[in-house]
Length: 249
Ligand code: C5P
Image (tube, rainbow, N blue to C red):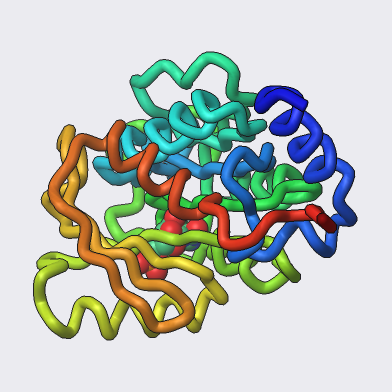
């Protein structure tokens, strides 16, 4: 049997493997065709039909992960807030506006997925009320009451079962020793398998320097690299082979 035929048979076996064998992080084999959900970009929390609260997330990191996953042949579901970027061709893209929209879309897209990357800069709070249209300036309340938004990735973490959930942590200074401890706490609180720790300077930038904080206690500081390179690195590490999935030979 030639190499390509052998590869194809291994691939077929992986695709046929029972779902309980396919999901664990340490069993996603290299070449395994995973279904990968990525949340990306900011959310907008409207005060009225025109005005909103938002943040400066460009969506670049999430789109880079989605693009890398498509390039590796994975099936990609991208749930993206409002960004200027064009989504990668080949991804199944759902555009959303608010955190609540993103929460609902991500929960739906997580069904049948193997891995979720929560890269979106989801607004933690939204105005308690939103009115239609555009009230005139003198009609706008100058005090805004905020209510908490759902935590998208934590909701996926709660229901993940054997699926792999990856979150990001943005600290003012990721090199600070306490930043890793905070990332560990986030990993536990949100039931993540991996927390990608980066600095606030990553927002809107082309490159990023991150430390990977794994659920098993390992930490891997990565060198500074472009967001495209980092996207590929993250997809590869998360789907890296640590055992032949469904291979009973
Ligand atoms: O708690 P914090 O916002 O620092 O956590 C960041 C991580 O949680 C990111 O992976 C982000 O996408 C995710 N998150 C979320 N929903 C929220 C807040 C954060 O999915 N409401």
